[in-house]
Every structure is written in C-alpha cells, then in structure tokens.
Image (tube, rainbow, N blue to C red; front, side, top):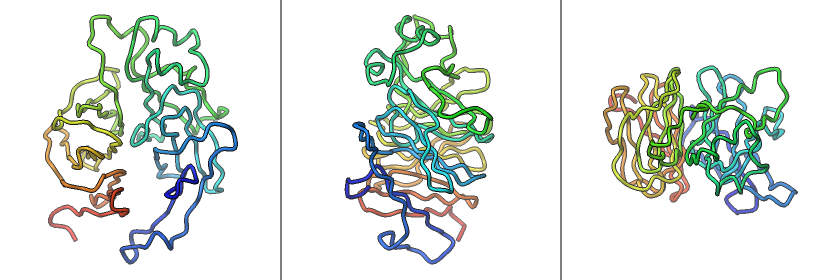
Length: 282
C-alpha cells in the first residue's frame, strides 16, 4: 500500500472511459499484511486474460498467490528461494504460470524448507543461477504447488556443465509464442525455446537493470521497461533489433500493451500511469 500499511493495493481502471482517472477516488482492493510473523509485500503481478484472476508474488519472498473474482487470496506456489519483484512471473499462451527463482547456497537459506533430494544436484554441482518453473494452475491437482519439489524447465537436470560461465540473475520473463524471453540484471535478453536451450537474443545498453518489466506485442516484439536506474523503454524486434521507445521516465515500473499496440507505463516517481500510442494511431 502507498501508506506502507498493507501488502498491496489493487485498482481496476477502465481505460475506455474518460481519462485521466483520479485513482485516489477510484475503488480499490486492499490486501493486508499476513497475521503471521512474515510481513512480505506483494511486488509482481500477472493477469489471466480468460478468467481475470490475478497472480501476485511476494517481493523478495517465497510464495505466489491467486486473487479470484471472489476477492479471496489463495496460495498457488510456495517454497521458492527468492522471488524478486517486477516481471519475475508471467502466463504463457496456454495460461500456465511461469516464474523465476534463484539457486545458490545463500538463497537456500531464505527458503521455507531445505532442498529435497530431487533438486539437490543444483547445489551439489555448485550451480548458482536462475531456476525457471512452469505450472498449470488449471489442472485438477491440489494447490498450492511446492516449488521445492517441482522439476525446473531451466536448467534441466544434468544440462549444466561445470565449465560454463555462471548466468547473471534473470529478473524478468514474458511469453512470446511457444518461447519464453528473459531479461538479465545487466541487460542481456535471452530466448528459451521448447528444446530447453537458452539463446542470446539482444543486448540492451549497459547499466543496472532493477525492478524491470517485460511485455510482448502482437507481432512478437518484446518491450522492456528498464526500471529505476535505466529510465527507458526498449522495443526488441523478433529479429533482435533494439530501438528506444521512450526515455527520461520517472522510475518506470509496470508495463502492459493492449490490442491496439498502446503501451501503459507506471511512472512510480510521479504517481501516475501514462499511455504511449504508436505513431500514426489515435
């Protein structure tokens, strides 16, 4: 919450009406802090376009929740090591939830439970780096799922070579068709295909990428909101060409794209959301 007294405050704004909307007067859903000792705020969000359900992740926490139309908050994934804020989770085209965790001896100390034998190879082989999971929350299986018991889709068991340079931390993900696109903390953009291979797609200008967000356009282009330090929005074409969409933004946070190609960007420092309309459109 903006007063610091809640885990999150959520607003639903119809952008088809008169703009701008004064959010201070708009209805909102306030999610209080948990009554248990852990007082984690919610810092990541993904929307299921079919049901309208919201998936909310704990920032620097261990759990992901679903907020349904009944306004009940239910856990869907627990047992993560360290979930960051921003775009560290997304839904693919089949409605499956993708989320990024991180494996290292240090982050295992933040986990809710020790690693099970099925994932012990991550630390036994000295692996330090991102771990990506995918779950189908619509399956007829009980929730929440335990991330510490799930097989990751990256890296796959036995595919990490000891001679490979450790990956920088992956801090954002978006679905692009059947592939997944990831952003690293130093501006590298990777594409993960169905074969499980992570391939470099583009390099963004050098800098510290923090509290970033990603979105995918209808043509397969990926938009990257650079966050607090970078203050720019980039467009990456399917061929990997990088162009700048906007600069000198006020701590740009969340970013979404609508069916017309318009971008909606949260400028956190200015307490507002702006819309960027593609050239030639009104």
